Length: 259
Image (cartoon, rainbow, N blue to C red; front, side, top):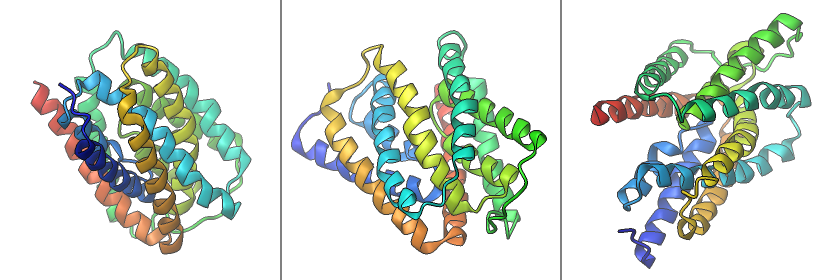
């Protein structure tokens, strides 16, 4: 039975705010807290995932305001994330209906843990923001990686925002703060928007939870993005490493429990 009383709504709003505040700092990971909270309230996994996906779009909207005010985003990177990633999201969403996900979830968990340790080891990683010459090879590598990450986003629906953040830093040498901005806006709004639409077509969204989730996502995303801008890339790097570690552990536990 679903619990729709006032206390549950209030608790879900607090959880949504906190998880999306952290996600706006690190560039991903809201599902680490928000998705289990929906499951705890009695939703089946398919309904919890669809409901969480809709709310995650609000995170992108809330976080986009502070970053867009800074006017530091470049159109070429936005196009690259959209054009390369969206076909991957669509293909991944289709594939998820015909293939089991345990192996890929395990792989994603291991890779996410690797991101945390890799960033931790590279002390100056994501601290610069050089204007690199974007040649065709770099564009190809960047596009291919974003397509693969988009596929995982559509296929597994969780944990992939962190990969976009790290990929934009590795390939284009962006700062952590700037890479997180691209992830929150273009993955949060567009990639997750497509995922929410495809999941919503199955009728799995629990609309009674959506208003409080959207309120928590918008406010948490907005304040988290502001905090990230104020604190800068070094602080964002630490939060990224912590969230990546916790997401990796969470994904591996998810597979272990389902065996």
